[in-house]
Image 1 (cartoon, one colour):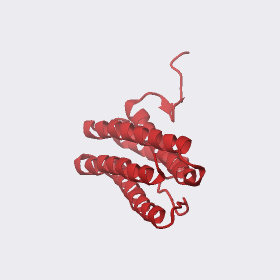
Image 2: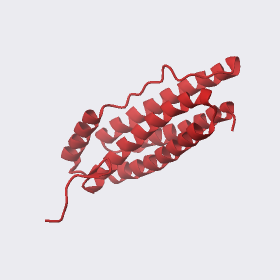
Image 3: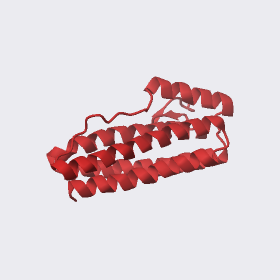
Image 4: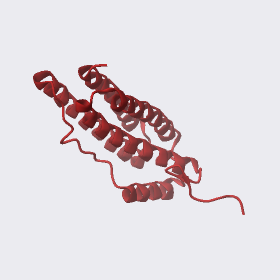
Length: 168
């Protein structure tokens, strides 16, 4: 895959992810769910805008850089506080619609992260920085969605680490 094809394919992945979050915002029944999904939809739209600029940069100069790529993803402490608020308000159980969209978001975030990992592994060094940064951000998105799912499903896990044991 060429760098230009990789950027174009990234745009397809990011569009797919963004559309899941936009659909979730429109169909979510709970305000907290809507806020989370809107944050993620806005983040993915930022990625689309950024990738569009990077595609233009590649076509003009034959080079691509990763500077300027930021994330609205909150810190781990903010994520933990948000999950605690969600649990307090919903008893740890978001509505069926929200849970379905969390599961759908998890699947597309996982697929997108896997694509970025392949690009980091396969592309020439001059393009790896862009895709390494996207991989880092998408893995953060995946962790956030997983944390929401873990809290919603009451699995006793936080970021895949067991919080408590049922064994005495």
